[in-house]
Length: 94
Image 1 (tube, one colour):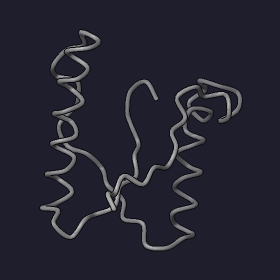
Image 2 (cartoon, helix red, strand yellow; image 1 turned 90 degrees about the horizontal axis):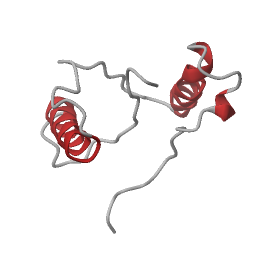
Image 3 (spheres, helix red, strand yellow; image 1 turned 30 degrees about the vertical axis):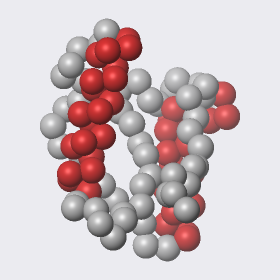
Image 4 (cartoon, helix red, strand yellow; image 1 turned 45 degrees about the vertical axis):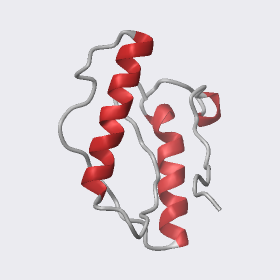
């Protein structure tokens, strides 16, 4: 989406909080965008909205909602046409 981002993440036992994680993620992405794309350093608004997924059904519902977001916004006719569709990656180290 051109004005916001959705992403899925899983808490790790050593994680301080979702707020710390999102704050660090915003900091890293803003610095990267400024350095590589010359976007303003103030890329993100303060705050965020989180939703805890508690079941496989909830996960599937949210994944479909996020995937269909560009179509609902009128940016594409089909969710499959969105060129920036994400994918799931397991980033944990073995």
